Structures are given as C-alpha cells and as structure tokens.
Image (cartoon, rainbow over all chains, first blue to last red; front, side):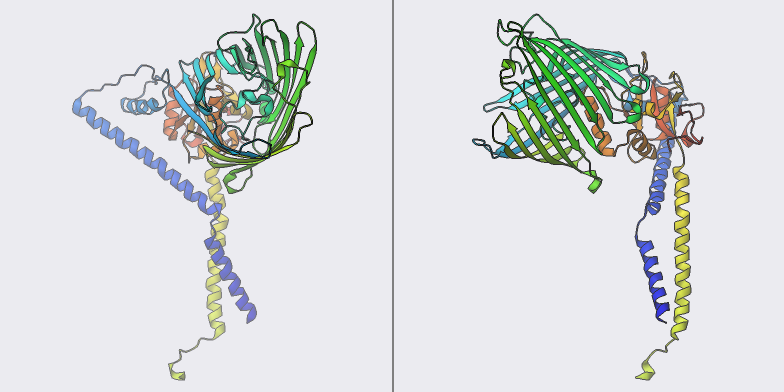
Length: 417
Length: 177
C-alpha cells in the first residue's frame, strides 16, 4: 500500500513539474508561431495597401510615380508593387550628405590616499561624434570634445577627417586623426563608454607626451590582399608634434620636417576576434627654437577583442636623439589588460584587470612630464543598458622612482546618446 | 454519526482509478515532450540563404568571408560596387542566425559594435534594417551591391543566392541554419 502511495505521489509531482516548468521546447514553438503570425499580418497589410492604391488609382485614373533625386533606383516591377517597393526603399535610400550625430559622456568620482589629493566628483569629457557620407565613396567624420576646466569648458577638435574610398585596398583621407600607433589609440578615442575601463592606459593618455595621440596630415589605409592572413595597413604623413609635445600641429608644424607613421596589422578571418599589429612613427621634435630631437617610436600590439575573454596588450619603445649632442634615450611602456564578460544576469557584468608599466630615463628632456609607472587596476563594468554602464575600479600604482604606492577608488558612469 | 458519513470506496479501487488516470496523463505529457523538439527542430532546420543583388560579381564565399563582409571589414565588391548590408529587424530568425553564427554577438554587443565601428571612422553607415523577408527580397534586387539573409523558403525565384563554404541552402554542410 505504501509503495502505491509513493508511486502516485511521484506521478503527481513529475506531471505537475513538467506542466509548470517552461522549457525551450515549450517556448520556441510559441515564438515561431508569433513570428509566422507577424509575417502573415505584414503580407495582409501589403495586400490591403495594394488594394487601396488600386482603388485610388482607378478613381483618379492617374498614376504618378517619380523617383526622388538620390533615391536608389528600383528595377521595373508591376505598377502597384513598384509603389510599395519605393515606399520601402525610401527608408533605406542613401541621401547625401546624411549627418549622424552621436554623443558620449561620463561622470566620475575619485578618491585616493595620495597626500594632497582631493576626492570628489568631476565631469568627464562630453564628446560629439559626427559622421556623414557625402557620396558613395566620400565620407566625413568629426569628433569634438568639451572638457571641464576650473573657469570654463575647453572645446577641442579631436578628429576631423574627410575620406575618399577607391576600394577596400586604398582609402585616402585628410585631416586630424588619432595616431595609428598600437591598438588602443585608434580603437577607443574619446568616448569612455566604448572602453572597458574608466581610463586609458597612461602610455596613451590624452594630454600625455609619451606617445603622440593626435596626428594632422593625410593617411592612406586599406586591406592588403593576403588571403587568410587578413592584413591591413595605415600609412600617414603629417605635422607630428607641435612645440607643446602633447599637442598635434593643428595650426602648423613646428619645423620643416614632416612626421610619418606606418601601421600594419593582421586580422585572420579564421581567428575571429584576434588581431596583431606593429607600428613605426618618425618625427623631428622642436620643443624650443634651436632644440631639435629625432624621434623614433616602434610599437607592437596583440588583442583578442571578443569579450570571453577580452585581451589587450601593447608595447612601445620611444627613442629620442639630441641632434646637437647625439645623446640618445630609450623609454619603454606596456600594458596588459584582461577582461571577461560573465554569462550570468544577462551578461551585464565584466570584471577586468590591467597591469601597466612605464620606464623612462630621467635625463630625457623631451619626456620631462612622464614619470616611471608601475600600476595595477582591478575593476568591474556593469552595463545598465545597451547604451550606459557603471564602472568601479581599485588602483594601486607607483608614479616616479622611490615614491610611495598610491591606492585609489574610482567610479564612473559612461554613456552614449 | 455513522449514518451521516459518506460511503467509503475501497482504497485499492480508488488507487487503481487514480493510477490509470495519472499514468495516462504522464504518458501523454512525455509523448508531447518527445514530439515537441523534433517539430520545433523542423522549423529551425530551414536554412538561411545569403542573397545578393544579381549584378554582384561573386557567387561563392567562405563563412569567414561572409563574416568579413558583415563586420564591415570588406566594404566593396569591386571598385564601383559598394557593399550594402541589409539585416532583419530584431525578433526574426534570420537576425538570430546572423548574430549567432556570423557576428557571434548578443543584440547589445551588435549595437555597440556598430556604434564603435562608425565612431572609429571605419564605416560611414550601419547596416540597413529590413522588416520582412518580402522587403529584403525587394531591396536586394533593387540596390546594387546589396546583401541580405533570407529564409531559404522565402527567397524569390531567380534571386542570386551565394554558396557558403561551397554549399547552397538545403545541402549538407550548409553552415547557416
């Protein structure tokens, strides 16, 4: 008797459990049937619209269908479907120029145990990005930033580029760029929302002098026919650094020597997410009249851009030579960043870690404001929505030789709009 | 008190009736569950065709090459024909397949990818959105250089369907399903 009761209990439990738990097999047919229903309704709407059009056409006994300038031309179809197609095509037609504006912003909080530091909030950069195709093969891109200063906001043109595409292998552009040295500088730009971490690595921070982040001139870029290697290149010729070494020569070069940069990278299609690259940059620096330094920067990067995991690593060597005394200096910097998008809670959490290092000879006069650095960053990014994120970081770093290590907590909300 | 009490059925009789009923319910549930996945799978087995404008000078791509096109890394079929990407709006099986197999991204990652792509000045425009397979069929034949993913059952007769890894939709080894 007890055995029968147990069997009955088991049957009731399993049946009710099966009835209550929604399985993919239960939900998928429902979704599919809904999709089918939507498609049927779309067809029905088209039929009704066609019918209405026929009635209007017979009433007016006229049919006027003119193609607007710039619209994509359609192949001849039946009169009614032609109208339907045009109404749909109009949504996807290309208009020139066609300006798109996107904004980026962030609000930050920082607190450190460094002597003399003040904790508190600060507004990050407000960035506006402009993109406008001018024709099938000509496009404009612009980026302006508003940075909070003690008494006002500083407006800067970060990038302004007009690009002519010949094909995938040759695209020529003119303007102001982020110098294609390494990976980060040409990948993340000024929108903090785009990057995983709160701040850029020190070696390529905006306003820093270790690597020239901006470049004014012309650039050729494209793919290199290379089969499975997926090679690409950027070659640029421009003004290089101005007399303020952290600035590009927007208003003109500081000497009669042009800077040039070459970057080659490989994105093998079979290893989707992987990229490896190498860059060379050559310039002549004139920080003051009569002071000239030759500059060679060589850099290499390897990245895995998928988020499970995300891996970014860059190394750069900056070589300076005093043209008067022939004294040379070599400075090195690198960072390694590892992140992982966690699969739980709709993949909103992304913890990360970065180690970065800078070594600079103390006597190099051109990098006077660069300090030796050894630092770690441990943080997490939480994507509130597709277009906004919270980030929290703990940093432990030593700036300068023999200086104490500094601990800090940093928070940021970054977004695009 | 005893005359007001309801007549009792023998427990064995009750158990036998319940047992039969429960057994039938369980059998039916298991049958439904066993049949449901194959039925659902049949719907999901429909291949997604890669359809291009008839004048596109290409008829076969490997899956990595299709990915390169849809990632915006290849933007021209030839010097005169730019690639025009057409992608279904959200909540469509074609979009799910493209995001899962081609982009290997979630919906959020896909949106973020194209914001970043345009922000990097690597592409001036994002893929164009189509709202039905009918619309995709019409636009892919109307726009030079257009490429779209369409349920192979809905592809219009005479459309130019690409081989992917040497296979057409419906053939063994076709990767987009």
